[in-house]
Length: 397
Ligand SMILES: *[C@@H]1O[C@H](CO)[C@@H](O)[C@H](O)[C@H]1NC(C)=O
Image 1: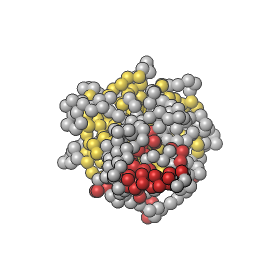
Image 2: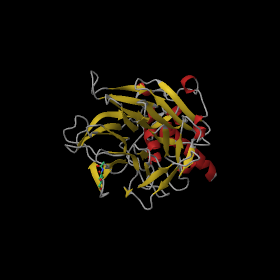
Image 3: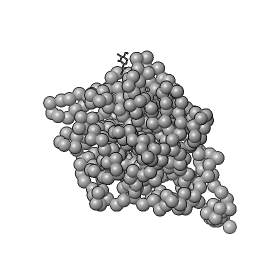
Image 4: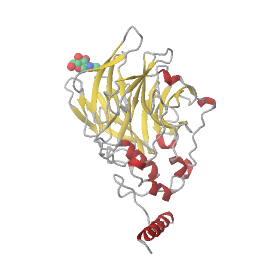
């Protein structure tokens, strides 16, 4: 037999061995020593809502104006001060840049960045941030955990990279892949840790959170957590585990619960802090029409949820463990890319869809990963693009 025939037969035998579990296939770096596992049956099937009814498509986001085009890289999140004038943009190389929103007579504002960097938080990738009451910028970094740029000195301080020994859940465990946070009036920092898998440096020179996201989804094990950092005791405790990629975090206006996005399960959970359900977790909204990423509290007390991409074919693979293990080995540049789309929805604390903002072709704004509402305007961060967006729902900018 010729070599090509032998190779074809060998490949077929290998594929059959994997599919029948004779040859268990591990996952590629950085998920080495990990295997795909069966997805918990209560999560399947994962069916996104169609774009109809509450989610009927519209073109509202086509009123978005791109700012800082070509000046920022992968600004997953941004922070806008309450005055609506100061902006902090976190980029994929670990830089936090500070800028000002400048109004103009044409009605289209621009953002002007200060020279130099406000803070370098790397190596790592900053994914979420908030100012605390002391003017410190508290940041979730995918490598280092919960860190802070101190007001004034701009020193980088690690607040928590390990769970306290007296935590009821996972005592003493390390904090890996911190992703997003919100800060309560008493100073408690609620934050997410997406998964126990590592984020690795890629050939393009940055820490590739998307790659680890994908491996986490293909592995099939919900390993994300919601944590709380107590600034007086300087300790972090785990409030809830088993979240399938814990992502955006936002407190309810009355702080009765904290909402945490569960990206791969297409839903947002509510972890109750007060009332008869305190300590328990339920679902705020599920079957979202795309993968949820960032969440923040809008000015009206409802939640703004950024749906970073439309449902991907990966959802169909979820019941098939060996196929997921094989798919994990597709090299990054051969992976099917998600089609551009932009989507932000406003959801009440009871889980009702209040309004939607779409750009279903993504020509104006796509891949929105973070959203902030200040002064009636929304500011958008995007994981993979080279700009931020600003959008005024009440008038075309
Ligand atoms: C931050 O520090 C400056 C002094 O460097 C101080 O004037 C300011 O009040 C601080 N901000 C807050 C919110 O405490």
